Length: 171
Image (cartoon, rainbow, N blue to C red; front, top):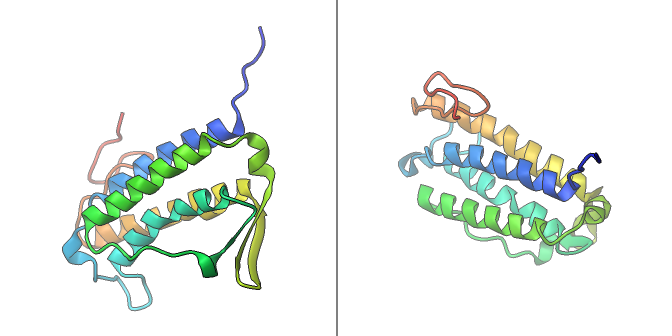
């Protein structure tokens, strides 16, 4: 009996789907009326953090559209001003990236992608690093920040990888 191997694309798609579900559970709890709150003057405001998280997933889709992206030509959408807008943006970006992932093969993930602004090159990395570093790790990092923000605002923190002080693990 032959061992079945999962493509890199399929594995990344499943992992991303799971992490997006966990992230959405946190974003759902962000109160619009607290968007301007920040735990420290050097910290991001709550609404800015939530908006940033909703947009992060778009970097993977951007990297799949060609060998490079010139940020000087990218029209960034206006920042959401409500939790509903954050969730809509997050959901649309999540759906778009799942569609984009379904249209690429594993070789595409090993190709290099460059992010630049005009002549200034910010980075050139394989798309596997875009998925892992710029999207997943980055999103998980900010999810940790957001969970602390929620705790400081006395908003129940959802279970993420296990239970929280407020919620049992999801089964």
